[in-house]
Image 1 (tube, rainbow, N blue to C red):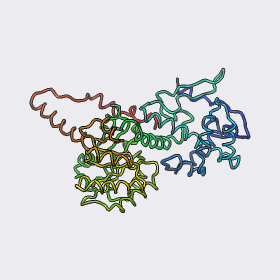
Image 2 (tube, rainbow, N blue to C red):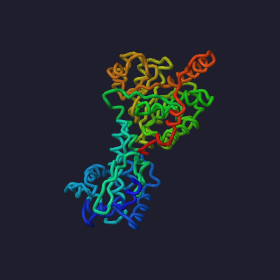
Image 3 (tube, one colour):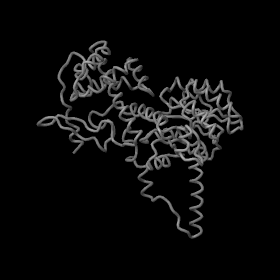
Image 4 (cartoon, rainbow, N blue to C red):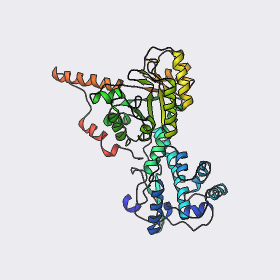
Length: 421
């Protein structure tokens, strides 16, 4: 029944030559028939080669640089059932350099992106599966009706959103960044394939990381040698469908240009380490890499892993590297092996600090200033141990414990993938 209702035309908006009324009357969102087809083609063309990671980047791509304050004023008045304020009319007038459909399309795209990304980001942070637009309106006999979009993907229907993929990516970036500035630390489990990631998300984890050891070892490749780049990026592509932010462990870049590698991933975050297969990068070298990644993909949360602790180097150098990396644009720092409370508190004052899971509870680590707790390769190693133990139980005539067949099938069905994207 919903599909039939969504095929109905959208309610007609009055003609307008000024402010929000003009904008409504000239955008694809509130058009029907040939007018809708023409405006949709124009809108799609405007974003077909846009790979923005933030709303600011999208605004620049649409030739609306510096307009987000105006867009935020327009957005609450954009829908035809919402009252128009004088401030919103003035904001449209500042952005409308002419009265052409392309100008309206640019403004309309950014208004809709602003509203969708903020709504989606809030849902990703809380794990709410509902789409950012829960209802849509259609013209029917007797008046305007409201059609629920519950259970349907974001942008569903005859007016399917052409920017769904782009808005979802930006929203995941926004949500993941916000997760590092909450009262409680983000507990980030690390997966090694699609199903382990889907199972972790289904268990209630709001963001998922990957593990370099798990990905490499699952393919018979040693970890830490920069040899599993193809496998790591293939997994990142699979995980784009998950209805939550994903951060990808890239080791030191797998011998590729890290800036181009990160820009091509569509991930909400990445780990980049200063460790190399045979030692450490210099702080200057790693800071330059970080600055280039930040410039190329500003919306991606860049977690700078510092491997000095693994090498037994004094905490003072770890702190100096952390400062340098943050100054270069790192959003967070990750020091594996860090356990001393004084060292944790010192480094946590510099940027959102990520540590590996340890004996302390998330609350205890949060009290020390930790913002993110990763499981690293722990889950993969535990899975290996449980696999062997289960095989031994079968051999020894014991009763093994495992997920049911149907439960695994459900995890990898299309129905469990992103309702937002």
